[in-house]
Length: 445
Image 1 (cartoon, rainbow, N blue to C red):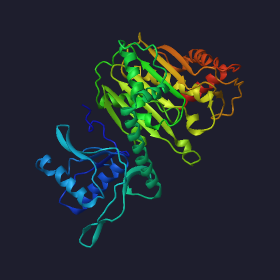
Image 2: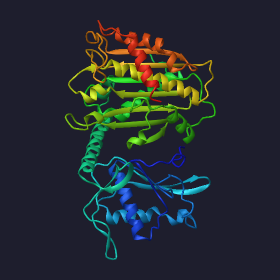
Image 3: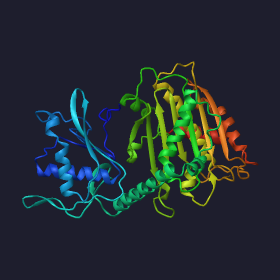
Image 4: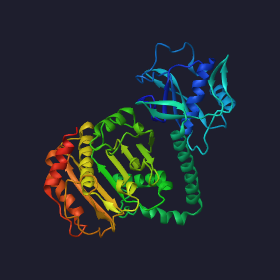
């Protein structure tokens, strides 16, 4: 089981606090604010006994006695009942790090209404918590903090509540209208020919199903997707589903584009969770059309297994940014393919895959029919972009030796990009464009 103390970092869904005295009203106020704020951002963890400045255990202020007796879930629930506007799910677990136990409060997700403060908490004449306010986790001045919600945070919390209500409707539909949901899953039309007795193909199929499970309620219109599946053809020897594997995996994924594949979603306020011998990362941040935040929209899902299997699926940025246009930017596409290959090679290196092995990479573009090529990320390249795509799905099968470096694969990338462009009648590709993009990527890290 994944130990949350193996890799501690503050984000929107994780807060670190040094040791709190539950008999101290000021410390009571901190725990009430922290837990209600975590619930308002759709759940998370409050870890006690760690310094938030360096994310390390606070050994100097560790209290004497049995931690399990000092921290009582019953007392904390009583505090929340007394001061919060309504009840919400909170549990308490004790996890070990370096042989010492630390309390971890787990706040459930699924918020459908904002939790506020219904009565003030006073210490003498000093007001520790105001009445009729709500708290939220936010990223401000370069760090994560718990704060009183302002206008922007209130909008953010309301969107979470609405999303969770929509998710309830989707679960009802899946439960009572199975035939309809089977038609819905036809959005993911890339599962034909899957061999369920092949462990890797079974992993890919499960990953697609997990994507629909997480993102299904958000798919209120037809999107185009970019999917990447990587098989290193060799188990990551000595690795199990623990913090060390997660740290190596994320460390191997270089940030070459500002929004890389297999992103550490914790930096964006989401969580990484273990499921079925895989780590899963999911981020859904969809802003409505014509808002100033529109070009910050993302919908990504990934999985990583110590078996040497990696999966990623995302909605094309053009579909999130330009709601009424069906386009594909060639520069962005070439950059993404280079980035997938680079990440796959680095995965093989950090997990010591033998040089005689090859990484098999399958890239699937779906929802492409009628889509046209249009340069909108880089206007320096003027290419004949051809007619709209004639195929709804484009699949690239790439086999590359793990000892290959990115700078030596331009010919390989050219052949595969040429294959993609062949689906756009009349489009032509310039090899200089690929070389320039590779040089730009190599210069970023």
